[in-house]
Amino acid sequence: MKTAVIALTRGGKELAEKICRLQPDCFLDSRDLPVFTKMADLWQEVDALICIMAAGIAVRGLANLCQDKKKDPCVLVLDEKGRFVISLLSGHLGGGNRLATDIARVLGGQAVITTASDVTGHTALDLWAEKNSLLVESKMKLTAMSAKLVNEGQLQFFSEYEYKSLPHDFQPVFTPEDADILVTDRDYPGCQALILRPCTLMVGLGCNRGTRREDFKTAVDELCQNEGLARNAIYGFASIDLKNDEQGLLDFAFAEGLSLRFYNKEQLNAVQGVSSSAAVLAATGAKGVAEPAAVLGAETDLGPGQLIVRKRKWKDVTAAVAIRQIRLSA
Image 1 (cartoon, one colour):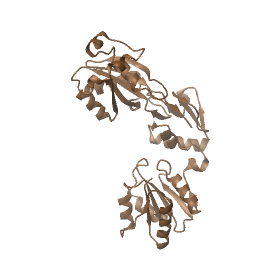
Image 2 (cartoon, helix red, strand yellow; image 1 turned 120 degrees about the vertical axis):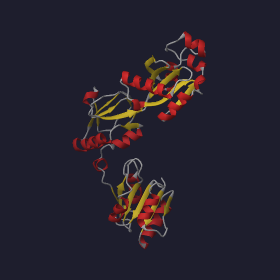
Image 3 (cartoon, helix red, strand yellow; image 1 turned 180 degrees about the horizontal axis):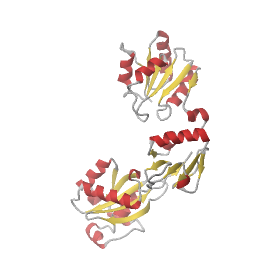
């Protein structure tokens, strides 16, 4: 964690130097510049900003800099004696609470943590989602469910995926309709639960030569819509290596910001339980492309991918979907 310290007084600078000796990758900004200018300059350059000054000064300096807790650095505010270490900004995802606790310990001070889940001992939903590589679909629902957890002590939990353990305040339920938190790759229009998306869907693609990027997008969009799959649960695409120069396919994967994997005919032919096509075999040497490519692309250390949508055909595109195994934990 790259950390910058800004101090205003002589005592504050002495404390800053002590923190920099104790904290890895930490430096004191000693430039002769106004404090607000320093904050603005450092904002995009560091992971953590430690302000040894009055909290009011720090708040005024940060007011126009804050954008998103996923992007903003964490901010701590300390008095020049190091008696109180306040986690002011990005306490969870930014690591501010943990950093405040660590610094208070070595200084012999008191960490000041105000996030409700930390104070009450409940699960921080954003951190749990991040730990399990789950995409939070709605920030508003994340806030609402975090408040409900603090107020009621537990949340009803449903997952379509295996879990070896759950947080102590998650209560498993048997249907998604009863859930406060829903881990799924399916679309649930109008669902009131906090939906957390595991990126688990691998789409296998076959195509005619010269297929346009737009045709791939249409096929994948329609496939997800028809099968009730969440578009943002896709984590990659796969095809035969003969298509590794197919410009429309390359452009499509690039525009989606997702990986594109290629497999040779021997690898594709080794996959069992998939559809075969005499025409595809004659053209490529592989008995199929979309289905086995999807299965291979979804393989993980936990096991092979599972084909959940067999190949669908459009004019120039064939697509299939496999799902990779994941295992949630507390």
